[in-house]
Image (tube, rainbow, N blue to C red; front, side, top):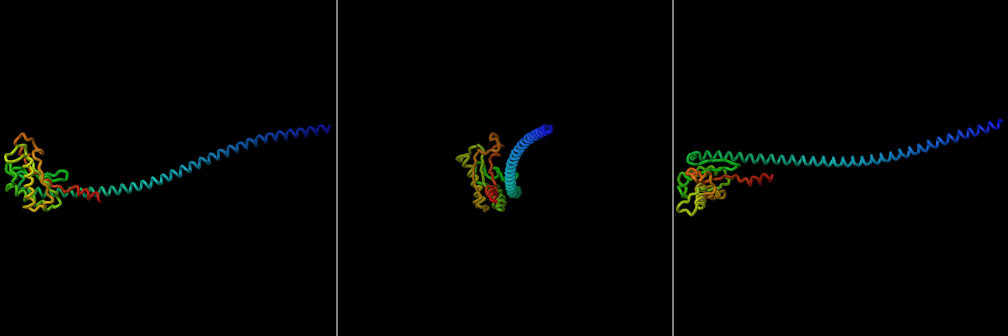
Length: 253
């Protein structure tokens, strides 16, 4: 009887042990699988972290480069602004000089204003218009007494500002005059006469002077009326501060 009970106990113990062993094996395998999964996940995370770190390093490098480029661009902009401000200041000074010269010339020829002298400033250029009736006889290129006096007053102002270029431009109406080849000849000869007086008589530097004629092709008014033709018969004396050289000086700085 005792032997039977002992045997039963042994069998029971074996079964319990066997059952326990089976449960532990399943848990072990599950743990191993879970560990493998965690290792895989960890590897993936490490790869992602490495990739993100690489992206971060690249972004930082690009940001540093952008910051340097921005600093360079800012310096260039500041330098350009300073150059522009200097150019504006220089040009404004020249414009102010032109206004000053125009005022001086206007004062110099004030006595001849009622006889057909007009001084106008436009776009940094001074225009001194002298009417035909002041300078010449009808159909003539010879400058009369009043015209010579007016040119003397103008020459005095011109000699005070030796850097001004001077262009004398003759203009006629559309009427053909006797003993004149054509109005081109009349307009250019009138301009030549003014240039000769300014240069020879009143010592304006000849290298500053240019004579030209526009004939009837530069009218101010309609040539169909006497008043219009009288307005068109004029000599323009154009005073230019030589803006081309001024621009060259501005760009050189």
